Length: 138
Image (cartoon, rainbow, N blue to C red; front, side, top):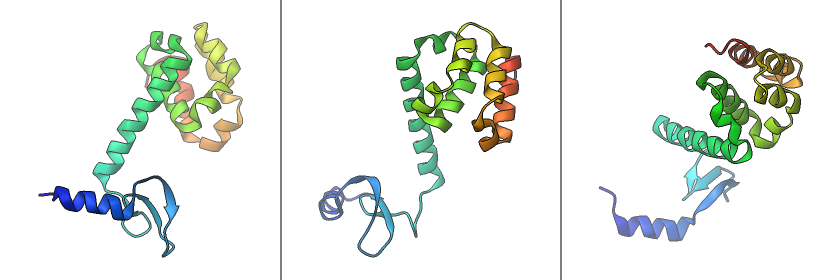
């Protein structure tokens, strides 16, 4: 059982930092004194972060490009995956790919993906996403 008084004392004494920082002993720390260097995070915490990040990416995509909601599920996942990897601003740099995608030209979108530095940087991930974009299949 979590002691609510201890929780508040730790929040007060450790503070709440939502971005990583290096503590006075040189450890990368986040939250209420979570020592990332030595403790890291649990699988459950990693899954929670992933779910939150997926929601954030989807909300950003829908706000910036509402037409993404009209894509079939496979191609929408390609765009979400790229946005997760590149950030929204990075994805928006794929103007030619997005133009083809919005027009329903999936070959053109796949070709634009293939003709990018990103493809070299992420290797197999890019190859898999290009096939998904081109075919609409996993």
